[in-house]
Length: 201
Image 1: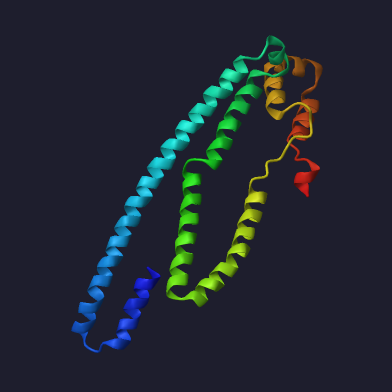
Image 2: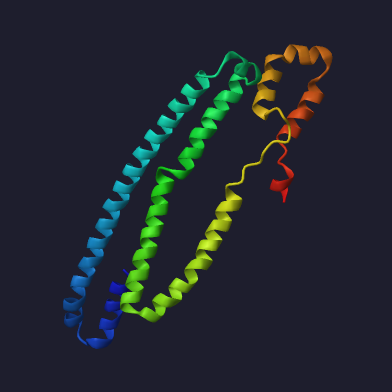
């Protein structure tokens, strides 16, 4: 698109009459329409393809994790509550969804545009292409740094996960009220949600 726009801009300095500009720029305008149609169809196909593949992969992960949980012995379920296991199942499938599906499609699109842009820049103006290539490590470093801090999940400091503590507290709410342990349980739940020292740094 930038190249076509450059051709149109350059034609304003080459031709004087409106008819000449119309004759020369009309094919270029048709190329703009063609590229927009291709981009529209390509984005639809990419969204459908990566969306369906990501959904199927998440479903497969859920089935495999559930089969693995069911294969454990009975003592395993004495130390892991139902809420904790279901939360683990959801978190695993969500983690897979964050690296597949539409997110993976966006990464492929960015990489493809980057490579295509470098090739076109080197073909039409190698000086600008070299400058763009020199800026790629800076852009990649900034993207990796942003992804590193954006993907950090706070880990709990307690041996009991917040989900397990919440489920057990609600299941035994009568006992907590009878012995006056509501404040202590709330404090433990608050500590379980505290991020660790590495996350604070």
